[in-house]
Length: 441
Figure 1 (cartoon, rainbow, N blue to C red):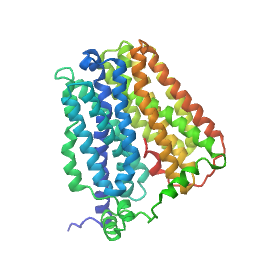
Figure 2: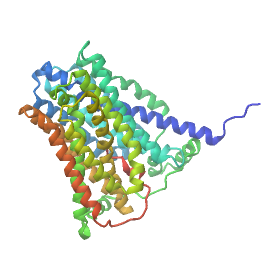
Figure 3: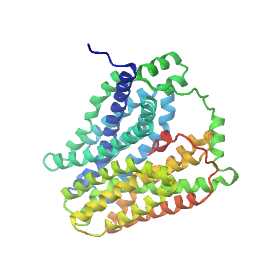
Figure 4: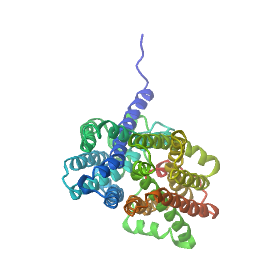
């Protein structure tokens, strides 16, 4: 006689469904983010729209500027309409924006598409992290968030294969049409994805929240009072009181250099590898290897930080990243270069994540969210600057200096987070950092 699944087992399966839906949404986010860098060598070689390296750098910055806008507004919009609706809106926005890129007949229209895509991309990731934090199986929150972050790099891998399979035989527009396909995923989210428990609790919809928590066998978020504008302003000022301004600026500068490095390399890796003499197919293979390294790095960095401390790991990781990025300016054998690209991917992405972990751990509970959010926001300016910088170097005929410039950004972040690591933190109280660890990446 067969027995029906226990409520706990059934709830865990439902929770994993939510995590799986969010993973797919972030996969599409990564695909759309990385597709521009994957097709960029082709766009430059064919002089599409009369594209020049400096103009290509501007276009790369449009998406990251859009991400800045999306990340800064996501919280406010989610508080009004709910996290589920915001996720669906973000997926719809960056999918339709890719359609604008696919049909564009000028740089201006293409740039508009990339900017709108960036807004959707910037709003999706922190919202998805909030969702999986609500519905992760009991005691599995940190692991689930780490798993979610692998989806972004899996999207980067997919973008390289889309470019390899479609750009040469069909054309670059086909790659962007593929990025429209996630639009079909929006109705799936509408039907299957529940609303965020945190949102329901904040809105006073306690019965609905309790019902969902019981159904998915997850803990109901604690009720917390909504902060007024005065509260938020006081939390921001708290980052600069009592000499804390030094620590705050160190975190901001480290984040600026880190995201400059992350998005500069993400945009220009295939093109810079082409300038180093590698064939286009090999250059796109490096995108796959780089993102595989990113997946591994996300899974191992947290364990290393728990043992040795997040600021120390971040500083060491940035040093290793800078060394790896600089070595890419040296033409080596294919095997050695592939290994260097992989290791650079391992350290680069998780080095930035460890900055957020450091800020979260060293902040007081009342201003933790503000500290992490502003560190992320300042870093986003580096994300805008990185793609532009690569384009300017290539336009000036100094493409060989591209990897060197990005390596120097890694060195600067190593110095700033290293100095922060040597300073005595204001608080050493243990905290659950899993929601703040990667929310602003």
